[in-house]
Image (tube, rainbow, N blue to C red; front, side, top):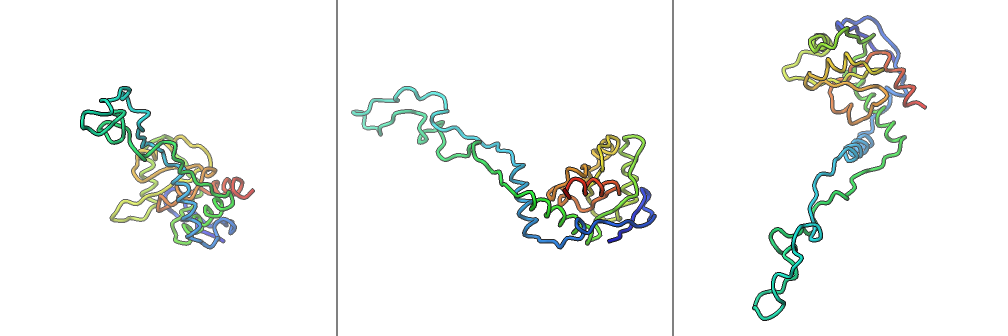
Length: 212
C-alpha cells in the first residue's frame, strides 16, 4: 500500500510503500483491549500498604486482667478492634497485578493499532525529521505545519528511528506531545495520542524489530 510522504514544512513530496503485514491488518478491538489492559496492569505501582496487628507498634502488655473488672476481655491494644490497632484485610504491597500476554498477541495488537491509525488518516509520514538545536520553538513550528488546525489542543507522538536528543529535548516541554523510539513501540503508548508522526526510516526499524 502506498501513502503520501511530507516534509517538515507539511508539503507533500511523494509517496512510499508501507508493508501490508504491519499497516494492513484488520483491527480486532477485543484483542487490542486485552493487551492494553495487561500493559496498564503491568505498569501499575503498588503503593497502598496497611499494617496488620503484628506490624503496628505497642500492645505487648495485656491492657487489663482477664476477669473481675466487668469489661470485655482483650489481649492487646493493637487488636483490629482498637483504634490505632492493625487493619484487617487491608491493601498490601504483596498483591500482584501483573498479567501475562503472549508475545504474538502483543505484536498483533501493535500492528492493529498502527493499521487503525493509518486507516483513520492519523498517521503522518515524513521524508525526514531533523532539527539543528534542541529548541522547543523549532518543534512547535514543525507541529504547526503538520497537524490540522483545531479548536481544542490535539496530541501527537513522534516515532523516532534512533535516539535523537535534539528532538526529545525540543518536544518534552510541549503539552500532549511525546517521543518514542520505533523499537519500543507498544499499543498503550500509541493509543494515548491521536496522531502519529513518523519519519520513513522508522519503518525499517519496526520491520527489523517486530517481524522476526
